Image (tube, rainbow, N blue to C red):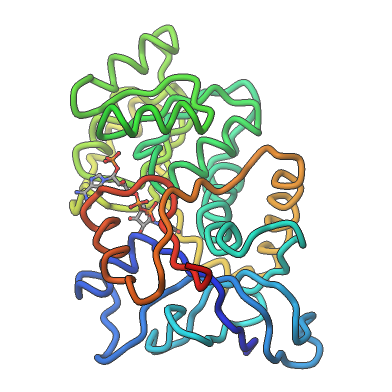
Length: 302
Ligand SMILES: NC(=O)c1ccc[n+]([C@@H]2O[C@H](COP(=O)([O-])OP(=O)(O)OC[C@H]3O[C@@H](n4cnc5c(N)ncnc54)[C@H](OP(=O)(O)O)[C@@H]3O)[C@@H](O)[C@H]2O)c1
């Protein structure tokens, strides 16, 4: 394990579910939440590629999920740790790994997004959505984003979306068809599920791919598979964490591509709110209550 002095930690949606006892995995109480951090290496196994003092970002995980990252010190498996560029602030480092790795594997490995295609990103103003907008643009795609309020629509446009739709007040199916000249979106990136998934099948293009990223709506859809057959589209599952265990050699490949995009100024985490570690409950609540945009961060420098 790489031992890390924590400088910043991210709030991910599943952290909020976990502290509410609503996540699929329920750690034994008491437990320390927090799955993503940045900080300095305190110690590392020889041959791990890390040394004391290295600035790193890491996904914190252990089998019991009991000692997470909202702490002074934490630890992570070497494949889940990456060096941070000198110029990257700790707050960006803590916000980087999960959302962009998820986007990279979802869009490029699972959905084979190509330049010139159109991508529809649901919950575009959220953490994983904001990363998908930026990665889609960097890949030369036309990006349509949806969000649940006019303020969040503005965030999507600022992140680089070509079009953004408030899906509470506007029919995103009709809007997507209109924008694509009736074709629909080639790739649909869906962290929401429920009705949003079901409506998405009405505006997916011929040979399109719907990437199943999560179910923030709280409802897991049960799709009729004959619809995928008659319309020639694919439903593609994505569980980024499984790559850490099943194909860890792919993680540094994605990390290198992502760092190159960061260095070129094509992707940058949108950190919308910063909290001190002792205010973690309020930070978690802002994400659980759907109030946040981009990434909410805990930082030792507040
Ligand atoms: N598959 C993977 O490997 C992977 C990796 C990382 C995260 N995830 C999943 O991706 C999802 C998004 O995570 P995130 O950290 O980006 O979350 P986030 O920043 O909180 O964004 C989630 C967004 O979902 C939308 N939403 C729709 N219905 C909602 C509801 N009933 N309650 C709350 N939010 C709702 C909200 O946007 P609007 O208001 O705009 O609708 C909200 O901002 C989560 O389900 C997470 O577990 C999956």
